[in-house]
Length: 118
Ligand SMILES: [Zn+2]
Image (cartoon, rainbow, N blue to C red; front, side, top):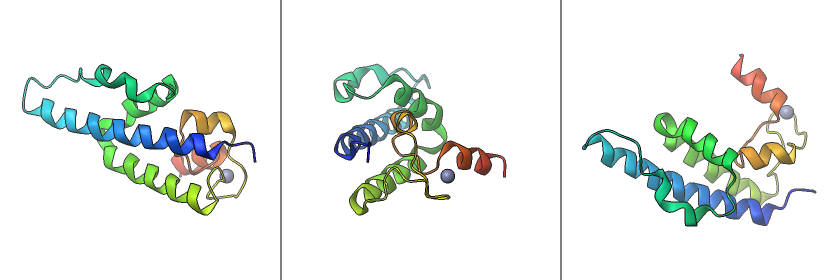
């Protein structure tokens, strides 16, 4: 098993915290001028979160912060029961670089594409 799940758990927890804060900031911004400019304030929380993770968060945050939180919780549960890093559709190991980019990924890239095009 090549995936360092202890480190992934850390990343997921940090990511979860950041999303919650950013979602709160977005909600607060809606009452003001509506600009999204608060993401830079909490870098210390994410020393080892990669730029790719940041990108993924930015892309998904506005629409479905709640969904991402649910997926993170699901990933944490899968770390606990030993199925983390395994594709939920075909059972193949999810490549480590994909987990680095999307630590809460549940599908290998092939199955992810299949799902998106279904
Ligand atoms: Zn698969």
